[in-house]
Length: 302
Image 1 (cartoon, rainbow, N blue to C red):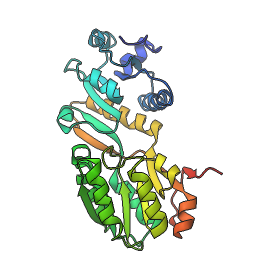
Image 2 (cartoon, rainbow, N blue to C red; image 1 turned 120 degrees about the vertical axis):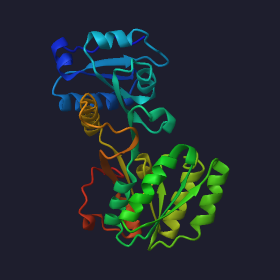
Image 3 (tube, rainbow, N blue to C red; image 1 turned 60 degrees about the horizontal axis):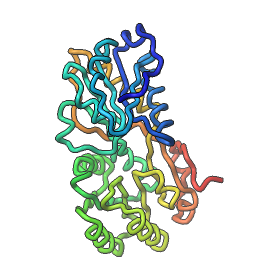
Image 4 (cartoon, one colour; image 1 turned 30 degrees about the vertical axis):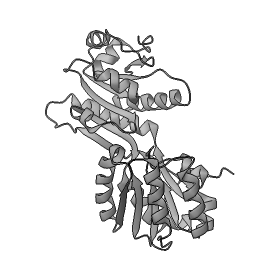
């Protein structure tokens, strides 16, 4: 069942027509969802009904509760929220976020915002830090990230970059792909991108290999996972939770307007912040100040 509803005045809910369904789990995720909800309410300019969902629960009376509260659009956060929202009455519009990836077949009737940073933004940041970059190499599992690589091809072209995307459907193949390509990289022009991919970016086997070779050979590695910056990659983009909330609220409010066509399918994350590793930058001879990019998180922490 769902936990007790967060306090929300009936007239506020009626005015916004929005509700949020999200997983009822502990930290650090609880604070993440709280920040997203703050952004939603800021954009909606009112409180919204919130439904924390216990893990594995499927509240049978949720559609009735939403109808009682005059909810016309639901923002589903996390996999649990998305699973519950997929069972709602069809007259309720659903916008989803807070998930890394979902099968494209599951997104046909709704807009899902992924937590994967937009490759176009990653590549733009790369060129600001390393103007001489010419080629981006990425190893990916097409079952997880085929949609993201399609975006990456366009993003790379816009920045004058060549994208070498190598498929790997298991860890053994991924390690072989990395071993084949690492010895061919030219540090003055080639860079390696680590997407959020559980098959090809293994934390124990792949990441230490890449970081060691990057340090020894002097080539740039950037990532879609901010935790990798702490480990030693040059930079990553990571979610701006409040801005995500504002964006999702805007999309949900727009979904209630019959006059505006609604985007469907999975979308990459554009509401991002920048993290950099200054020790890695110094080792690679990269002047971060010359990029004039705003940096939100500097590692290692001083």
